[in-house]
Each structure stands twice: as structure tokens, then as C-alpha cells.
Image (cartoon, rainbow, N blue to C red):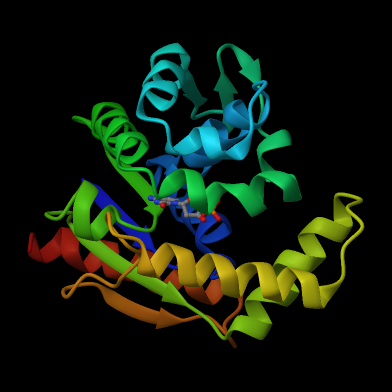
Length: 224
Ligand code: DC
């Protein structure tokens, strides 16, 4: 069974997907973390940012990258190193939209996502799961929320992690990422026609989780 949860930054995808997966004993795959790992790897290279438009450089990077997940601990490993915390740093958030717009990167990540999910019961969260990665997913959900609310959520997370940043900067970054993610040429962020949209602006995480769990359970009973 494949559950697709898509939506913009800060819409509550990660927390919700994690809890839905835990409640129903499904695997959880955070596909944004994969793009973040690629972005981190590129940032760690000796290069200028213009390199990312160089086909040969990106091919080399992708050939050297190994991304693994531990579904028990929800950790992500980049070439054997646990980068679960590092990929959330603001320098990665600021750069990741550019990296995820590169078609070579997307092709490789989509293949990997399909490979990891093959034959399993998985909740995948991202931007293009219901439209591109698994257009035949059993349940498709599109989470959305007001940009100020999304900014507040991200801001709280970053402050907790000790980053020095203002709420305005976080909101600006989210608006810019929304624009880049939804206007890019390859698999832009968009709601699949058959996805159920949930506005999480005023919803608690538990309410979001309950709504999605009941959608999945109804789908399971009817076998739609
Ligand atoms: O969900 P997130 O904020 O961790 O995602 C990081 C970036 O990765 C986001 O700016 C868009 C990109 N992304 C994507 O293009 N496709 C996905 N399936 C998941 C994330």
C-alpha cells in the first residue's frame, strides 16, 4: 500500500507522515530529506554554486552518493554518515530548491524512492509523490496551510535548534521556496487531481493524523 502526502514547506507533512506511519505500522519515507542530503553533499564540495548547472559535475556527484534510511530510527545516512541533523540547517534549506530543480537529480531520487518503497507498505511525503513518483498511490493527500502559520512552525523548529534567524527571514525563505518548487520545469509542486486537500492552518497534528488515518482505513475497507 502506498500513501502519498504532498504539500509545501511547513504544511505539517513530516510530523503527520511520521505519526500516521507509526500508528498504522507502515514504513515512512521523507523524500525531502533525500534532496536535502544531495544539497548538503554539494555544499560540502569544493565548488562554486554555478557548478550545479554543469551536467558532468552533477553526474559525478550522483555516482558518488549513497543515501540510506533507517526506518526504525528515522535517520538518514549520506555515504555512511548520519546527516539527519545537518540536513535541516538553514544553509541547506536555502540551497535545496535549486538542487531539487535539476532533472538529473530528480530522476535519480525518483528511482531510489520507487526502489525503497517497492513491495512495502509506505507513507511517502514530498512534493511530487502523488503526481510523479506514485501516480497510482492508494491514498493521496495534499496538505496546505497559510504561509504565516507555516513560517511560525519552521521558526519555532529552527530556534529550538539554536539557529539565529528572524521570523520574517523564515517566512521569506518559505515564500521563495514555494515559488521555486511550484514554478520549476520538472515535477513542480502541485496537487494531484485526485488528492484530498487538507488545510492544516487551524488543525492540531492529532486532528491531521486522525483525518488521514481514517481516509486510509476507509480506502482499505472499500479497496478503492
Ligand atoms: O520537505 P522539505 O522542506 O524537507 O523538502 C526540501 C526540498 O526538497 C524542497 O524545497 C523541495 C524539494 N522536494 C522535492 O522537490 N520533491 C520532493 N518529493 C520532496 C522535496
